[in-house]
Amino acid sequence: MTVSKNMTINPVTTTPDMGVFEAFELMKNEGVQRLPVLDNDGNLVGIISEKNITSAAADRKVSIVEFALLLSKIKVGDVMTKEVITVSVDDPVELAARKMSDNDISILPVVDHEGKLVGVVSRSDLFRLLLELFGTRHYGIRVTFRIKDQKGVIAKLAIALEKIGANIVSIGNLDSDQGYSTIIMKINGVDENLIKDTLSPLVDGNLDIREG
View (tube, one colour):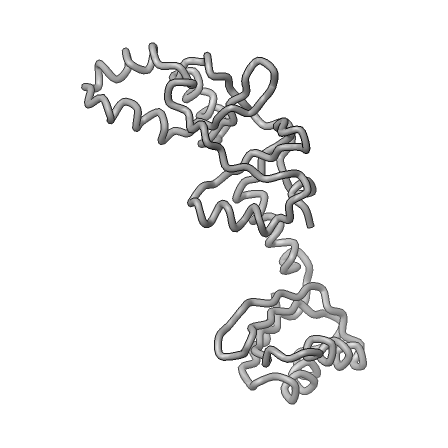
């Protein structure tokens, strides 16, 4: 799944010439903490955050009164981050998630093949995707278990569940250690006891079953 399917289009942006106080008010009104910065040609030239603004004043060691005056004079272009971490519309969503995690940021500008801003992807966007991937909006039985990292194990599980008439709503694979993986499934169409009897011989014994 690509970033283009999960991004927010038409994001709120600012320009290098906008005052930081105005940019701060814009962030507050729009409920965001970072704004992509575009030049007059629509090119992405930076990104500004609340931290950029507060750090600009802190670096100058000004008083509260001087802080307000300072904000009225500083432009976005003076304090924005110019080396912007971005993702492409064709990048997989897991790459966006990794970039946000590795760099401790909550939003990434999304650019097209010409480098033009076409949207942003945020932690909220990825959180909504996570809910969908785990089938949390669908009724079913949530099953968690460990399996050995061996070829064909998932196929055997799917075949066994198909034979009892179970429907796999979602499946997630979490890396574990020592040659095992943790599997989380959402299943419906059969009761808990039948699922337990079917899966118990195929997993390592750590079987957790609950409605969800």
